[in-house]
Image (cartoon, rainbow, N blue to C red; front, side, top):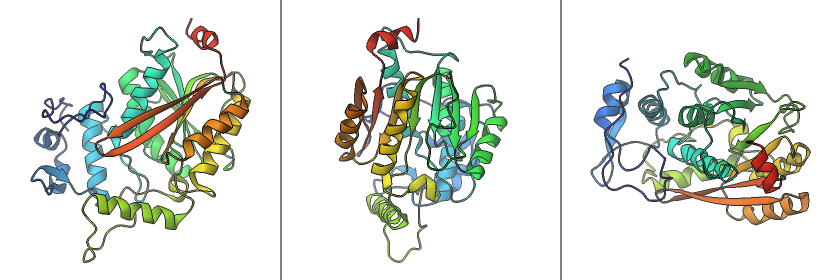
Length: 321
């Protein structure tokens, strides 16, 4: 495989919604991507506007596209996940990290924090270990990444080892399926931030309904065509849990209080805007000093994450002095 070559700057139709430091602005240079990752060529199609794209309803296409992006933009030479595991949309994952970097900078005189002194905890890293890969490449951060699924962790370890990132990314098994931080964060251990992409759905039927909405939005809902159950994949613990997103984030918030002095900022994605005030109310009762809601967008898609800290501003500033 040839050495990574940065693709040419994208066309001028850049979406203003992406974070300014996000590498995925505008349209992709498919010739450059294919030159570096030839397997992508067989998945390229023309979208309804006559522009080159891929079939996002095809899991194999999504995986090949991710592999090409990771190699071209982040120098990740080896990346693969087991069949059926979640294949994440990389631009959105990158946005979360860039906005989180901005949040951490507010406690450091607005200077972006870089280097291995910045340690983050990725809750539910999955088989793809995407946040640690992107965060280390963009900022030099070090990560602890945890999951309850041994198959996912084995996949993540293969990716980490295959890219010689063992010193930057540590993997840990969460042995208690009902716990989030307990059993993962060691006594006295400190993290600049935690991040999480929680299971959004309350069950498999809801997950399937969400996938069908994606097909429709992509213009792929064709009754004559057999489509995959989940175009972006995902195991049960990646996509749903009892009580859905609302129950998971409530548990995450409740547990965070016990680690108030060991984590500067806790954070989690929220797919449902209606869950934001519920989480804000819970965090207020738990005694969070600062709660931030960060809105993000990729094209027509809107998302957000909520971040909170139990530390006073002076305590957060002292974290970096």
